[in-house]
Image (cartoon, rainbow, N blue to C red; front, side, top):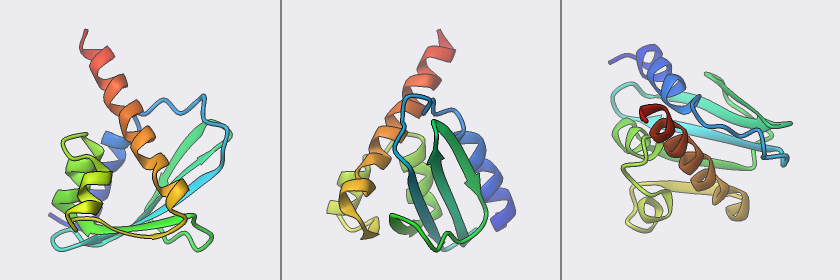
Length: 117
């Protein structure tokens, strides 16, 4: 899998999160290791979610993991706190803001469940 294919897959999976009630500005960079390696960022600004295949130098937190780990995180198969605890996810930056990633993932899972009903 190429980085372009992986990024397109991640963006499709992540864009289901309804962050309209999140007013805090959050910016995360994801460093993807292994197959499909590359960098992308997720930003929440004014209740909107943006995902782009670039570095984000003014980020609040940076996450580093494999494509498999990020996929499991985004789809909700793996809890980000647990992934950090067991060493599958490396986190740098503001840990308080980094923890909000779980909230975004939970919103994504909730939206996907409601669409299935």
